[in-house]
Amino acid sequence: MIAKKVLLVGNFGVGKTSLIRRFVTNEFSEDYISTIGVRISKKEVQYNEQIVKLLIWDVAGTSGNEKIPKAYFLGANAAMYVFDLSREETYIALEENLKMVKELSGLQNITLIGNKKDLLTSEELIAVKNKITVPIDLITSAKDDENVEDAFTLLTAESLK
Image (cartoon, rainbow, N blue to C red; front, top):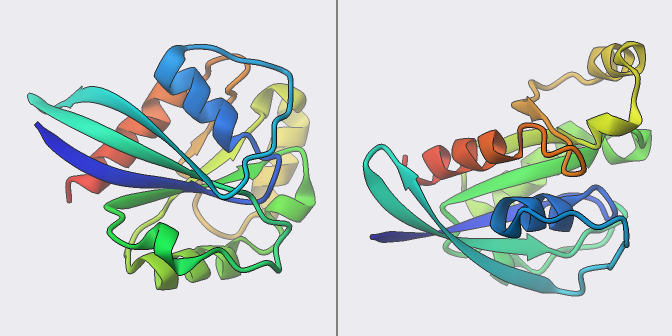
């Protein structure tokens, strides 16, 4: 078995903790609990006939201008940047935020996830996608358990590169 450190980063309230909870325990809660610092979860997954132990670092969200401690990023094998499809302030500066995560982590590729699809109509979703200038890897809903497993499969694959 191999262990891989993976990060979930993004603004506060975008659903990082909800995605992790859905993936690790298949639970969802409407209650918002702000992550302070970092919370680490573990889950073993099978990928290409390998057992991979994911050490999932849920990094506290920011409102954009606060600095995340570089120590959280050290030794990361992959990172997922999560934004909230229903809140423009979480995706307005995606290019700069992805660049910052790449610089802090030393990673070349960051998995980009748009979460909270359940809060938008299909027309609103199209409008949001048209505003975003970087490629989105997946659109998810932790609440509806849509594409959550796929998002972590992408993250696992990236961690093994």
